[in-house]
Length: 102
Image: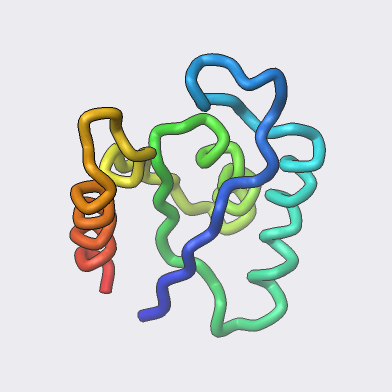
C-alpha cells in the first residue's frame, strides 16, 4: 500500500469562517492537475480518498474523485489543530489516524 499526503489547493480569499474557505481559481486548477499527476503512472492510481472536514480539502479532491469514481471520506481526525490541543496532542492525533492506513 502507498499513502500519498496531498495538501489542499490554494484557498479562496477573503479568509472567513475561521479557515473554512473553498478554493481560489488557482486552487481549482491545482486540484484538476492531480488527475494528470496520478495518471502519469499506473502505480499511482488511488483506491481511497480521505480529507478533513474543511471545504477546501474536499474541493481539492472532488475532480479526482469524479474521475476515478471514488467516494471522498471526510475524517474529523484530519482537521486542523483545535484550540484546546497542544502541538503534541495534535501530532499524536494525526499519527494515530495515519497508522490506521498503513
